[in-house]
Length: 138
Image 1 (cartoon, rainbow, N blue to C red):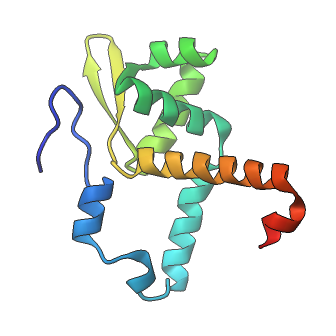
Image 2 (image 1 turned 90 degrees about the vertical axis):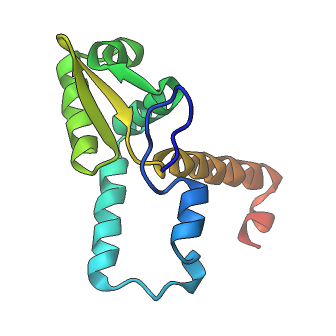
């Protein structure tokens, strides 16, 4: 895998790698029950405002210590650490120790595009609502 200069390594799922490595979504077989449950569990992990903000901060900063994240989000370091552990369990983030600090980064390249798509959906829905409910249905 090619590394971008001066940026942490990001695994698979970047839009370019994903497009080359896997078939398009519409060409894939219908999700099985087990696969759907796994996707649901992933979205449950992401359905937390703190974890979304943590991921967004890590995407923006490339990497950050627990203390830096806590300060930025106005949280206690232990609370941040607990949420980062949940994200680490899914493989979305990774950590490394630097002296007394634990530094986190986004590990999976699908995270940034997923957040971007979520914002796109949210913004698109907002603009449709501004145009009126009639257009939002069509």
